[in-house]
Image (cartoon, rainbow, N blue to C red; front, top):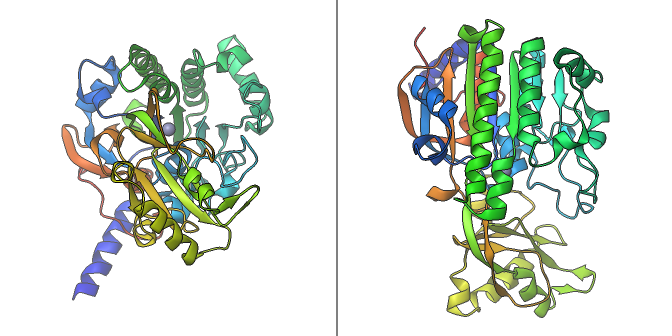
Length: 440
Ligand SMILES: [Zn+2]
């Protein structure tokens, strides 16, 4: 009986997935989006609040481990955790300095882009991570120069833009050509908003994904609640307004669903912990050679072993950590291999540290184990507390107005987009979706 029920549920979800409810889904990610941005009226985000009031929203969204930008954005468009989709961190472990996971070929599972193309739905993306070479019809990806953050983004990215003439068409349509200066932090979200509005107005793709980035940058620099963060949120909100305006201009408003979500929240940190100092002191790292070393990403640290799956090294490191003074042990929690498997983290890792709020891990191998530092914002933490959660709003076609849910998983976003666009589940598995959809 249970099996029959399962097949019925699977069939019904498949059948509803096949009926397209929205002709267009605009998927907006605000890097470092915290739910307060739309829940608390003291944040300058009138468009977000309007979308929330007209549509549905979640009070919090639980992210993936680590709660960092590239793995999270890949989870948004695959519906799977990093351990399954293959983008484990922002940059591969031991990649040359500055080489991040730029290329779509790093993703091991189907994405919204591959599914849209298969279904004959055109897609667009602006600054969405891990999209160099992706099957996206109108794409301005992120690609910086390896080991050279100073080179302007525009000239490095230009060869990877699809179609090649996209920016020329934009210049012809808007009367101004983008320049390197448009990609500086002060201007970047304005540029992203203009590109997204142009792509929707000009091509009306069925799926348009847009990634705004400055709220993340300002929270890293100044902490969670600095004026600079509010200024960045205000600028992003106004660009969302521009994008909504371009949707109205095309007359497609009634056939479009707008989703706003993010990749992680933020934590204010004032202390840092350097676990590789401990490993070096105990000869697990010696000069260029190493038996085990931590790869740190802010709020977490991942133990890699030179010999894959070296359990003896893992046990040795566990002993060393357990032998630290009590006040140092309180700076982190050990995440076991079993827990890493359950949450879907990098399968090569044998143990991880989930840092406590207010503490970040760093890769230093020299100097003190624990340091005080100037207040800054951080993420990368284990996704199990308020500050690190991100948010979600959906509004427009197919969304039941006036609904809210307490909590969503980041892994719910891709199945919701599939349902709206009437394309099959990316994982081939049926998934129960949150009750935010309208009946018709
Ligand atoms: Zn981010």
